[in-house]
Image 1: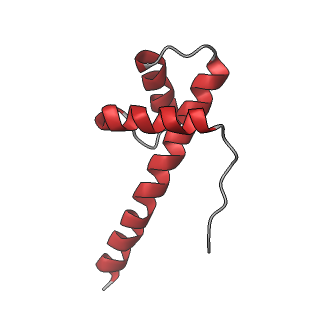
Image 2: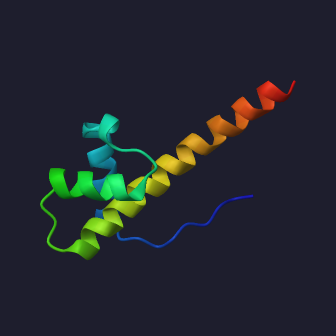
Length: 78
């Protein structure tokens, strides 16, 4: 089943992907941590924009790690 996502402005997506590519070790699937990292690494004009970027980073990293974890669980069951 194809997963539908939230509608986000393209600049939020591009900026989030750029931050992840430049600093992959600083982000994880924890929103509070990502919010602090975005605040430290980027000069955002508002808290709302910072939160949108951090939220998108969180969702990207949560979705990329979810299939890996499911595969590991299936291997341990056998």
